[in-house]
Image (cartoon, rainbow, N blue to C red):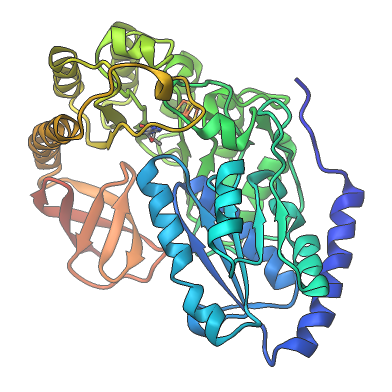
Length: 462
Ligand code: 5AD
Ligand code: SF4
């Protein structure tokens, strides 16, 4: 499959649309502002920063006051039903704003909006939403806004393309970064894995990788601009396919001069290679000692039903290699409990997996059927009460493990990056509460004086 780059002509035309929007809104509003709300994952956060960048190019300034905003963009998530409910009720909150200020333009985009039936639902039940667009249309925001403002009519840009056609790569989109020391860098978009429970391939389309030269240029620009914590993003970074593979890209990114940390997420366990582990090992300062490796389940039959393409044994082997190469690495994971047909005994395999690995942190999710996925059509859905029981059992087991992990930091000296307000993060991404204020975006050394399950306390060493 070839990647689909948006042509420079299209990107150029977007600049012209931005100028036209600028002209219109200058007349329409006294000082046009945009309010951005994001639901969901880091990929969505990164997308919102690009949408904000385009809005600024169109002449809006960012506001955190939704009541007075002239443009409201709601970037939605579809990963679980709960996420969609939040996004819909989040959208509902803007009804009153539209009533009080009818000139406000309200846009809904992101993974939820990408689904036809959700687009129809918004069209029919949320009449105050002016613009709905799917994940592959973000780079066309200026043009879409222009059409809404010019025609005064509601507009819908949800392609309904099949996943193998869905998705493009747009370079040179302006970015409005929300931090001046932490940055997201998307290296690839979409996913080809089709885990049986997951909606992502359906709403973000097939995998496509950015050009490595573009990515490395962006990273170098960030480091030169003083960014300290850079996260490379992709649904499955290990299947990055530019003119180099992911370990080579990471190696190049971590070889720049300067004091910074590179993180990446997410890695699919089936593709976490020896080469990747080697690169991480070789850059202890510039690559964070953190590996997020979603296991989803500890039972082979369930892993197969999830279409994860690895076994428990294979997964544990990878964990062992990671730990052998980097004894101080933090390993975190995602777990789904109550997947269709999962028996109580099979669930116990997941509990034993988390004990065996000894994760620093787990993110546990109750299985949520997603329309259009294979698992949603399976028989044997688990009652909600039982799902909740399993969820709680996992959390309780993990609390103990995390507390043990944290204890191992007692008395140690660690380097942390301050987030301001006496909070910081170490290389393992653990939150460290500091004994005094350190400006955000500064690295300092601290001595750990107290440990809790999910956090550490430290004394700043001058
Ligand atoms: N139900 C529950 N959790 C899900 N995830 C993805 N799809 C679903 C679903 N249908 C979880 C997985 C994934 C994380 C981002 O969200 O654990 O790794
Ligand atoms: Fe979803 Fe699986 Fe792709 Fe992750 S790898 S986005 S869980 S389909």
